[in-house]
Image (cartoon, rainbow, N blue to C red; front, side, top):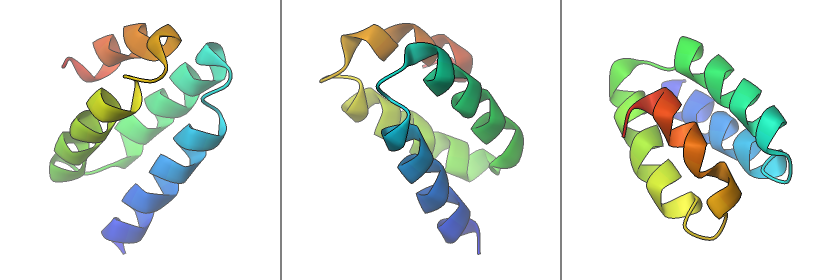
Length: 65
């Protein structure tokens, strides 16, 4: 089930990435929901995802990358 939650979180973040404020809020929800090892996966994914979206770079502060 946790793999499903991680995939769901990624899909939500991808959908709201057009709005940095909304992305930030959804990322906060994900941090509260995901397990520690899933957070590591999310950090890796975020590093790759924001390469194309520099306006989301400050969201990395939430996950302390």
